[in-house]
Length: 324
Ligand SMILES: *Cc1c(COP(=O)(O)O)cnc(C)c1O
Image 1 (cartoon, rainbow, N blue to C red):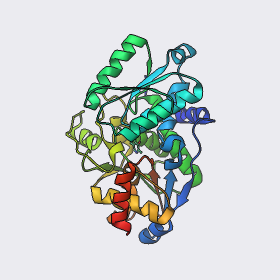
Image 2 (cartoon, rainbow, N blue to C red):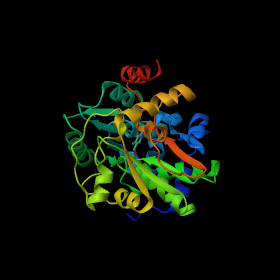
Image 3 (cartoon, rainbow, N blue to C red):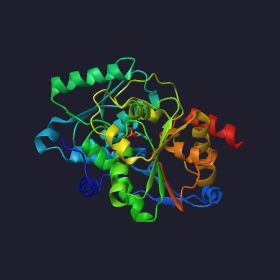
């Protein structure tokens, strides 16, 4: 398959109707005051299923042929992508199978099941869940929906970039969190194609900066990873990565790496200032803007609150430590 282009993002947007919603982009007064620039937060935490992944899943699944759809879809995922596939398949009346490892927290497994998917829990690691996934594709003819390294998924996530620019055409800098890079590749493609002057800053977490390390090394590598508040950013980019590493390398001007205290700060900021629950992965860029001096970022800065899936006890502990 060829790389995605801007027209693929425009086509993806048409496919979103009735499945994904157009999320609000709000100004954040306290951050704007601190930075002396307008800070705009794209609230994908309010997206259907609580994360942006529904965009990529919608674009991928709606692009399958009727025969492919009839076979059903399958994915393996630590959470938000699995939920998105389950939800989109349900909306379109298709069967979905989601393979998860035993390591995935129970509350996430339950959410996927509630959305109507067949959940297959297999193995202690993501890799073992992935092997089960390949076995089921071969055995049952299910259509794979991968979480990031796919032109349709990238184009779907890219619709976020279109909406951000429509709501604020004068964006100077946009910070995007990176894990597998589907979000970064899509948003980067949209923003840089429409306005090459926009500065893009990739935000990785110290505990799993896999994509950034691959860009530095110039080849796919595997990293040991550690537990983090931003658990939706865990996972590698795949040893056979074809699209996202190259697109993120091409479109991003700078990269920063945030630590756990910045993630927690971003989460508690969103609750205190906006009464919004944002998961760690969604708060990394906000935490970085609060915590460090990133120099002159221009007059309008965009960030993406990418999701709202939290483990409630961990969330309450984290925010109450900072707020009470
Ligand atoms: C998947 C996800 C990300 C990272 O997206 P990639 O496309 O894997 O880089 C960020 N935030 C949330 C909430 C996610 O679910």
